[in-house]
Image (tube, rainbow, N blue to C red; front, side, top):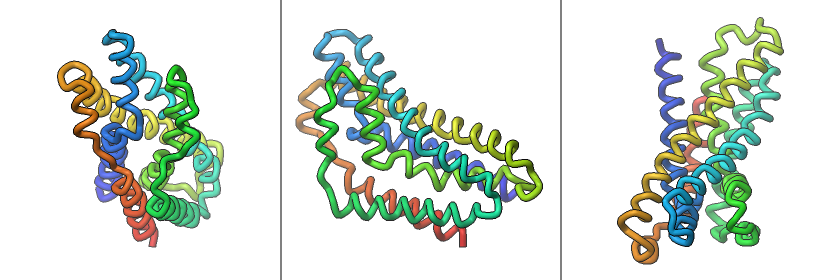
Amino acid sequence: MESIHSATALWGAVVVSGIYHGVNPGMGWPLAVSAALMDRKRASLFKALLALAGGHLLAMVAILFPFTALLFLAEWQREIQIGAACLVIALGLYLLLNRRHPRFLARVPPSRLALWSFLAAMAHGAGLMLVPIYLGICRTTETDAGHAAAAELMVGNAGIAGAVAAVHTLAMTLSGGVIAYGVYRWLGLRFLSRSWFNLDLVWALSLILVGTISLLVTQ
């Protein structure tokens, strides 16, 4: 029963982190608004959102799947989770000290939104934030990892990684899409210029928080 509650809480964290990423302007919803306003077509908004979602999903998969490959070493799972938590905390501290946006993102053409979304997610550590949550979900499903075949563990963990990436990206796209559509349909560019909000500090602190919680849970 306790493992069921733990798994539910962790999947909830996957959804909440997706909503959080979607609300953050740094993940790209203003670019979807800009595309729709420039083309004067509502369809351009949804096309841009799909491109952003595709890039974000690819970034999540690119981060999670290497940990899937590591987890076949079941006896080292605790050490892997501690290492991942330390990585997340280190990235949060780095972003806390270095508040400048990555310059290379400005060099990506507006027509390549999927590429921009992938690079933005990687640069901000969006996928890395999911790693401790993903590892926690894997621990709740592996009831007899010590006796399971390596191939079976790999397939199971890969399936969980794909599901985590998909659920997270869906939550991100829906939350960001709601904001983008509201700005495009009713609020307009004046809202963006007057009500722009920056979540960089909160983002860095959230990485540190997620890493710290994961580190404490593994003790």
